[in-house]
Image (cartoon, rainbow, N blue to C red):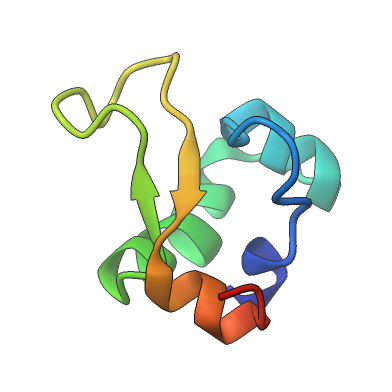
Length: 73
């Protein structure tokens, strides 16, 4: 999960495909279960489209707590 918090924050928030590519993952399920769900539950990341959590256009951004963990905030 910590690996997810250290994606470059200076760019546009990453989507599922961006994160999978950065981590070298092929499985969307593994990405969701190993990285996204725990980080969302811990309040470290948030959806950019909270009203559409399953949207193919969904992206993720760090919360204040996530930025503090990475030393950015």
